[in-house]
Each structure stands twice: as structure tokens, then as C-alpha cells.
Length: 115
Picture (cartoon, rainbow, N blue to C red):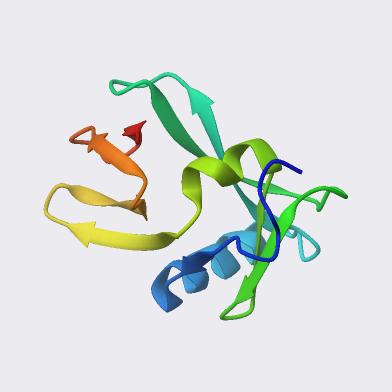
């Protein structure tokens, strides 16, 4: 593994976890978990992705507030120490990744430039 599972940290707020649980229930995927991943693209070079998925053998797994969060090893290096939140504002609502590894973030909050 590129990133040690013993030191990997990721958190999810209670509000974000409630939104994830509601979406999983709505889709009827009781065995699904939230996958957080990083892909190339976006305004700043990398972008976050969220999807419902099943656990793979090499995933980093975090469980909090009744939600299982999965991160593949490649993405772990970019999101280590991050917090997944759900934000509601006059600009809209959605999931937000608060990432201490980002040197720049796009105004939309979905794209970042890593350290």
C-alpha cells in the first residue's frame, strides 16, 4: 500500500453521514458504503468524487456516525486528514471536502491542487 492504514485519517460530519444514510436508504442499497476518490480534472488539476460502492480488499475503511467510508490507496494520499461535510447555503447544497492537503481549491469546492 502507498499509504499506511494505521496512520490514515478521514472524518465525516454527522450532517454528511445523515445525508449519506438517507441516500443509501432511498436507493435501496443497504450494503453500500460511501466511496471517496480523487481523479484528474477540474479547475485546479484534481477533483473529488463520491459514489456508493462495495468494499475492495485494499480500501482504507473509516466508520463514523453509522456510515462506512471507503478510500482507495491511490486517493488516500490526497485526502488524508480531510473532513467530509454537507453544506447548505444560498449558493446551493452538497457535500464538501475540507482538505488540509490542498494548496488551492476551486470556488465550487470540488477541485483542488495538492501540496
